[in-house]
Length: 115
Image (tube, rainbow, N blue to C red; front, side, top):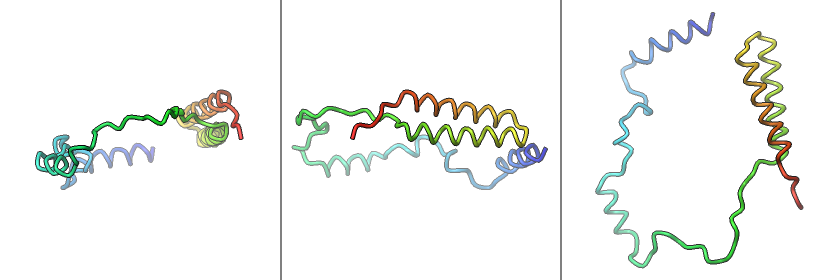
């Protein structure tokens, strides 16, 4: 009940605010201006390549979650599940199960670290 009142108050207050939120600015304002592009092009030396080739023969290593991250996700998921059960909120309980399940998935698929 309290959540509904807070949500309705927020829905009424946000459109009535005097200033726009930064996330609601037009997308064109985030694009670089032509003057900025010209300055950046002048700062780059002509001999400098735009793409640096990898020639040292090293391999790219894909970062994967470790067992420790899986354990942490399972603990957090269990805590959220318990909280959802105590306050009798099914959405929070389902979220806890989902996070805990993903933690179990990460834990079981993580390769053990080789020292």
